[in-house]
Length: 179
Image (cartoon, rainbow, N blue to C red; front, side, top):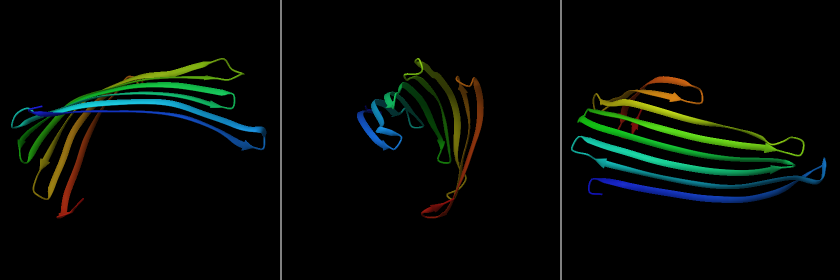
């Protein structure tokens, strides 16, 4: 666009694998079969809003379906995942930049196990993770810089809210090296 860049990426793969492994305990060997289909799509947009503000946003979706057969055991699972994020940056000066944003992950996983001795068993989980953060890049000198911030996150599957401080330090030891 006039002020930004839009990107879109997609991928699909499928496999069909079957193997009979020799085994002294089984006259016909041990059979293993795997079929799967995977779809992945992501899109993002980044833009300079004005001289000091810029933004980035993105969405992605994954669908994975696996069908596994080992001996007389059938395991089928499906996972659908969604991820959305938004980040803003303001350049206050050449020595100080502030970032803040939020992201959301949603995962739906379901699996079924069955064999000749057991009725089908269904299990899985749904998890939603919501997070928000703020961080700053601070350049003390041409040799010394650090990044500090705070991230808050809620994970539905654990019913857990956490706040995580962040701090990193970089010291430039030469033209091509840093600690």
